[in-house]
Length: 258
Image 1 (tube, rainbow, N blue to C red):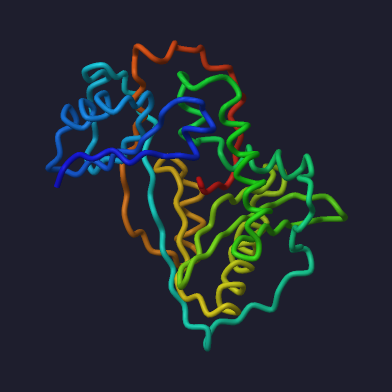
Image 2 (image 1 turned 180 degrees about the vertical axis):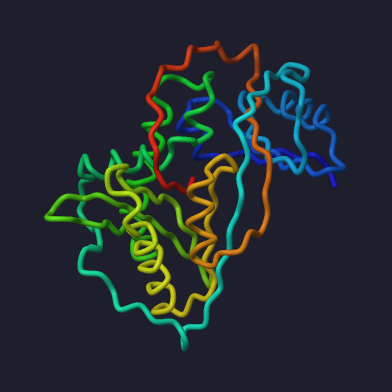
């Protein structure tokens, strides 16, 4: 197999730079892959690697270690699944996104690779997560946003998308002051019941390897680890000028990266 680069149209338009994706298997050469990227004019390459990459530079590219991701999967039999529902959980279908939703989206990505990478343009993380929320609203009914509300205040959020027999969770977050009360579990069960109602038996979610609280939640809810990968951003040195990362307070939250 070759180290081919996949051009990412949406990301290219979003960042205003040519962006590609490289799936690096154990038998692949990082040098060859990035040389191919250079020849094709890619200025940013997302590297999804089976192995850890220890070097910080390769050819014309500066590599940023953005952690890793782990995928969890849960399958269930609709005939035996039971969830009575929770009146605090509301389907979100507004045309405009409430500020509380934006806050929770940012919390869900507190360990996102787009927040960890100091060489992305300032504000990229915030603009990206806002765009993902907007896309969820526009893609209904194949996407859904649910909130958990207490006395009219939104304290939890979960987003999901489904295609054929698989549903994927995008964002999951609970305000720090409301954690430890089972809200994340209730939101997960809401999406599971949605899957059952639509004949979907497989639910997937990805989160960061460093996000142990999210992993604990998924395992508690009987999700099974499917795979883990290492993630890197390779920046074309001639095309990107390093930016100092803005200082952001770390937040405690439950999250799944889109």
